[in-house]
Image (tube, rainbow, N blue to C red; front, side, top):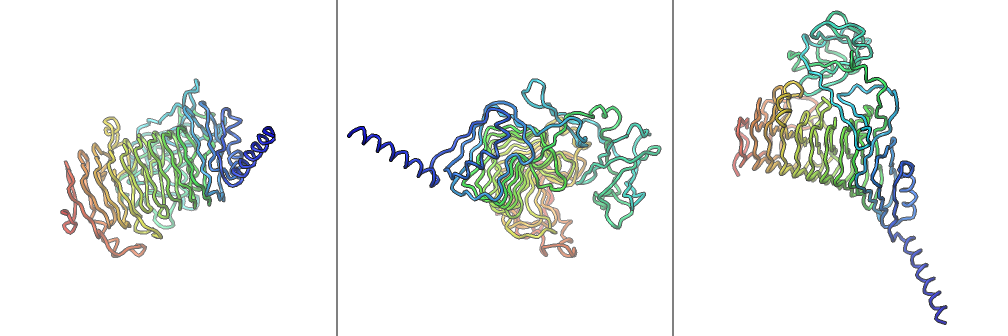
Amino acid sequence: MRRSLRILSGLIIWWCCLAGNASGKGISSIRISSQEDFERLDTLIKSYLAESPDSIDITIAPGNYFFHEGHISLSNIQAENTSIAIHGQDVRIYPDMHEGGSFSPDLSFYLPAADGTGPSLIFRSDTIRQARSLVRIVDRKQKICRVKIHGQISEEDVRDGYIYITEWFRGRIYRITGVKDDFVYFLADDLKQKRFLYNVNLDWTFSLQRPRYKLIHCGEARQEDGALCAGATNFLSVQSSVLGGLNCSGLSFYGNNYNPADPWDGLISFTLSEVRASFRDCMFSGMKSDCISIRKSDDILIQGCSFSGNYRHCLRSNISSRRTRFVGNDVHGSGLSGDNVCVVTCKGEDFLVKDNTISDYGYGAICIGLHYTEDKDGLVSGLVEGNEIFQSEEYFRSAPQNLLMDSGAIYIGTQNDDVRIENNYIHDIGGPTYNRGIFADDGASHIQIRRNRVENVSNYYCIDIDPRSAWKMRFRKNRKVSVFHHDITVCDNTVVGRVRIPRWIKTED
């Protein structure tokens, strides 16, 4: 009798476990310990999602792993009761590599270290020089331009080469088509329909300042042919999906490719999704695309992560995103693409950029707000607080030769609803010219700038509420706003250096 009761009790427990799993109870565990297991990660996650567990716990063993394009692709997943955790320690993740692939004419490249401990990230150190003429269009039909540089070069020296041209707040890499004397001819696929004399895709208003240039993959640099090239861009994408949560921790990512056809295609991408995702204690190094891009998705947290040697945004969220949080991260040498790219760009509702250290950035460190020409279909509100932003001594010395201009460590675009810039420490900022500490551009409105310390901005204003752009809000036909510098408070800041604050701006509480 007792034996029968024990059997019956066991059957009841077994049935309850089955019922619990069927109704979304329990934890499903996955352990990844080989590249073969890593390749199946997407399939494993989706198979477990079909069982509707409370959570899927993925542990990746220490080691090197390579991801292919769209390695984890969660599209049209409806699993609001299931959370996914991906974690590990000493986990190094690289993009798929291939021998002799098409050379990527970027500003640096990386190779995995021979001992498997991590990649060697190699920055090109070629000096950027000022051209001796403006860029001229010589054949509009074939989109050929030329620029005069220092010294003559031969056709052999630039075979399969590129020229990197930068001025003001944009830069671009172009394929060289030929040379004659000290003129370099190149293919410019971004020609506008009219202007006959201007700096290609660069802003014509600064055309009197000759562009800077650098030759890439020319002469001795051709030795890099056949080196391992990054093929994959996206490791994780979540699109049109609902999840109870997605939490990643302890992962180190080294390098990826950039997809110019979709600049929002980052290493990690969220689009039209409700996820409540977090990334903690992860590392991102050598990314050519955005590290994390967020389009119309809410509740993404990046905390305690490190970023180094990345070309584009470490984080970018658009106007339709809410509660994007970038907290307590360490960023060194990022936003280096030579374009108007900031390390962190937030354009949504209730964002938080707090307690980060950002050093040696490219165009800007933190960017908020929309340009006056952008359609605004949501709120721009949030807090930028307690961040330290600076350039190291070595980087500061090279800044005038290598950086863009006309930006700020904290850059504020025109259209905002309720933005606060408080208790930040900004120091040792340099560049070619017009590099500020805090910069409210193009008639920016609805801003509070309080209790910040700004010092040693070498070539322009520590705080600049630029009044020169006000006319754009009155006369530009493509503007989306009609008022300028409305509802701004600038007070209780400690500034060692110059400021430019129009007399109509409120400077006292």
